Structure formats: C-alpha cells, structure tokens
Length: 620
Image (cartoon, rainbow, N blue to C red):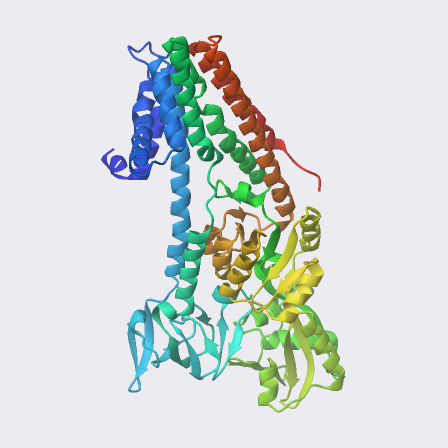
C-alpha cells in the first residue's frame, strides 16, 4: 500500500478504483450506510481538481474546464446531489490520468533513441586499440570499427571496405557498400569486416544526436489541440455565474440560482468529445488500427496531404529476387540460378540470403554447398561451385577485375536499375560476366488501391524516402503517388513536412523506421507500422497499424471526419440543452432535482449518439 501511495500513477489508479466502487455503492444504495458513499469519490477525485483549478485561477487567471467542474461540484454538493458531484469528479480524473500517460509514453520514445548511441568507442592511438567512453572521442581521432559494432560518431573511412546497415538514418532496407573516402554516420551498424575511420562530428554534432534533438523539437513545436470544452469554459463559467446571480437578485429565490448552476453542470459538455473519440478509437481497433493519442482523430480530420515512407511502409522492407538473366551458352537457366545460389550459401549479406531463399522457394530444395567460399567486404563473394570459379557482387567488383558488361546485358541492367532494382553481377573464372540477378524491395499488393482510395477523399499523396531517385520514382509510379522526394535524410523529411504545414497544408506521415521518428512527430498526425516498425517509430506516432495493413488508412481518414461531425453535434446539442434548461430554471419551472435529471439526460444522449460510431463503416 505504501508503494502505491508514493508512486503518482499507482496512487491515482488506487484512488480511481476506490472512487468507482464508492459510486457503485452510492448509486445502488448498498449497505444502508450512514453517509453517501459518493463522498469518497469527491474526496479522492474532486478535491485535487478544486485545488488545481484554484491554483491556476489565482496564479495565472487561467479559466478552463477545471474551474467549471469545481463550480459544478460545489453546486451539486450544495443542493445535496452528492452522487452527481462524485460522478463529475471521477470522469475528470480519468481524463487527466490518460493525458499524463500519453505524455510519458511520448517521452519514452526519445529515451530509446538516446540509448542507440554506443557508450564506448575503439580509438587507435600509437598503434594500439583503446576503449574509451564515446563522449570522449575528439575530432580527428582514428576509430576502428569491428564487424557488428555500431558506429559511435560521424566520420570518413580511411582504411578498409565494408557494408553499412544505415536503416536507422535513411530507412533503406539494403546495406550500403562503403570503402575508403566514404562517409559513415553514428548509430549505423558495420556488418562485415573491420575498417578504420577518422572522426569528423562528435558528441552533440553527430547524426544520431541531431535526430534526438529533431524528435524533441518536433514534439515541442507541434501545435497542441485545446479541448473544445476548455475553449468555451471561460464563457460558460461567466454565463453560469452571471445567470445565477441575476436570477437570485431578480427573483430573490436562492433555489432558482442553485438550479441554474446545477443545469450548467458540464457532464454532457465534458462527455461530448471524449465519448466520440473513444467510440472512434474502438471502431479503428476493429480494423487493426491503434490510436495511441486521444486527439489524433481530431487532428487527422484536418489533414490535406499524406506522406508515405517507402521501405517497410509501401513495400515489405526485405529484398526479393525479381529477375534472373543468364547470357551464358554453356549452362541452362536452372543451372545458372543454382550456381549463384550455391555461391551465396554462406553469405550473411541480405542480398545473398534473399537469393538463396528464392532458390529454396522455387525448387523446394537447398542449393549445393560451395567447395570454397570467400567474402569480399564491400564487393561481394568468391566461391567454387562444381569446379567452376564464381564471382558475384556489385559494380565495384567489376571495376576491380577490369570487366565490362556484354552488350546483350547493358539494356537489361539499365531497365532493372530504372525499376529500382539492385543488381548482383555473376562472373565466371574471373574473365567474363555471364549474367546477373536483380533484387528489389517488393511493393505491397494493396498499395495502389489504398493510394487511389486516399486520393478519392480529396487528400494528396507524397513519397518521402531515403532511397535513390530511380527506386523512389518506380515505387511512386506503381502505387500512383502524386509527388516524390528521394534521397531524404531524417532532417529532409522534417523540412518537407514543415514547409507544407507552413503553407496551411497539414500532413499525415506514414512510416516505420527510426529515421521516420522526427517526421512522425512533426506531422499533424503520425502513423507507424506496428509489426515491422521500430519501437521508436511506434512511440513517436499518434496512430499504429498493428498488422502493417495500410489498406485501412482510407477508412481511418473518413472515420476521423465522422468523429468530428459527431463531436460537433454533441457539443451543439449539449449547449442547446443547457441554455434551454437555464431558461426553465430562471422561470422556476425546473427545481434542482429536475435540473440534475436534465443534465443527466443530456449525458446519456451524448453517450448514445457517440456509440453509433462503434459500428460506423463508409464504403469508399
């Protein structure tokens, strides 16, 4: 019990639980207690609200919903409506708790991003490797990075060749080959071999730390949606007090003034927005959509453009074989495929694994083991298969062996590259190119229909990706996306989104990688892929597609608009009911008991109207 009282979250949950039980006891009059059990809810939930409202009013003259609720609590207690007072206090405390949990969850994503930075770095000094804290690395230091290690700072490779997994920065599904003179970034991972690098950007200037600041600044700069009840609360409070005072002065009957305050009790107004949003969230959940921030649907209804990341969002995020071309007259297509698959059997490179996996899927068997195997970092592999010497790798491998493409392959290779493919060349006996394998990140089959449905709602589409222009244009063309921005670093995506939003064109960002986190935060609404997406992307987003199913995004867009229509109707109806009740109270037609009944009827009506959203489905 002591641990619950010392922890804010646990204490709030404990008080909410006790208050809920007390309200049940009060409502059903269980146990014939000497006092109304709802006083417990007023004590645990109501007093903190009154204290916060008083503090805000005295220090900042901040008149919001808490002030209105405090007046309603006092009025309800004054006329003996103890259950109504406890009910209002409980509802408001639940809302405040959920808001605090949302903020804590958002901050957790930034903390995970910070933990990606290596704690130590391997620095070469006087010919010896020294392990030092990463924050002590200085510009100009020589670092040695082993296979599998995360790079601690930004710099330039001075010795060695490798492949770098830089998905953390660009979102690219495929590792990027690097050699002497190439730049590498902090937070990316060295996949093969060992290389030396010279540090150029360290500490707070490194790429990963810049991304941390981007996420934080995007979070801070996003316009906060103020609850409609809070926007109107000042005027409602003034109207309630003035109406009650005037009624008392004109009629001389205190009971009428108290009744005015009672019918102003904001239950229907307080419930108007959250009930519709919760019903909308419940609807979305049925279609594999998790809305993690309460005001996300409200913001989504205002979106005019949707920006997609490519890798892992429109595509599956894994390379697959799309074309195999054999120009050798000595071996058949099947023999060629088996030869390249055998050469890649021991490779740890994702492209090599994709070739082997495709062979197994095609022929339902494993390729033969190579007689010899050698990994050539940053280039490819060398192997002997059935007494044939095979080389398989990238264009740098061709240059190393002074080989040119046969004429019959030039157009095939150009076409594959134009379609966004990565090409693995196959050479035999170190003397001629005998074919190639083209691999690409396969587009999701429902991507084109989804994009078309989104555009039919009047929303424009945009592709933001770290991939090369050719791959980006091919995917955009296949999916039917209107605008493309390729070669994007995290800050580039952030810049594009902010430019659109400064032009009064709110953007919804859909992404999956750590590199998408700043953009997800900066956008009007961020949607993350929950299955393949990183934890940090999910934490940065407002909405998560649990099953990575983008085809429900059009439903989500239309649902958000329907939720807003429901909210507006709820608010208008609750306000009309309140003002009508005020008029009746002033005339003495309503007494406090009937007034309490009226405002409860309004609450029930709002809940029923909002619940219709649970089954809503638009045919687009």
